[in-house]
Image (tube, rainbow, N blue to C red):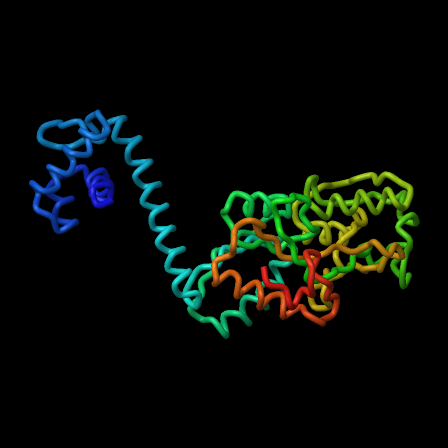
Length: 309
């Protein structure tokens, strides 16, 4: 490991004396370490030009892998430290775009108040991308919707979020208290792109209502859809916003279809235990929703607020 670290510094400086000074090493020690590394890989890593070092193509490859290897070792050390001290570890959390503006910041603020030493590595993504992050081990937990179908993932449902039809303020349906989706069957729709989860739910709800929607625009952000609805470019199926998050110029009409909701929950790899720091955070999030508005039973058994993965 020392030789890799020394090689990276030498590759960055391309100067034996300066690298030795930065590393607080004697120059002969650094020179011998480089010679051992070159013997091990079976190729020179630098070209010697007028008593100067120039990284050659072999060295470029070695530098790429050395940096990657050192990063992996640092990540392993951090994960081990997390296991030893869950109050000061890192939680790798992937989450939906649509909960980034309100719900998630409130959760993080509340958790950091009781665990100020915990750090978060956050990834904002669409639902299918979150599944990929969790499956690949890039995230410990995914806060996503709807429930992932991959059998490798354990799932705890937290919150049933109602879906509604967003229409412009001056729309013919704007004064309705509730609306059947079929009544908007002739309208242009703005929607999210496939395979985003809310797009799948939109397609399913329209099929249940007996029509195939005509899409005027496809986006990757719910906020963009709401802005286009306000501009009267179409209607959209979106989650019911919290009052202070509603888009000006848009009316959000509850749908009569009882299936017009999506389930927000926590996903993790079924066969890999969560690090204690992530386990504690998952329990905090589940307890925060337990018995609250829209709280649901955890899909893998037990109440969401009581689950322990």
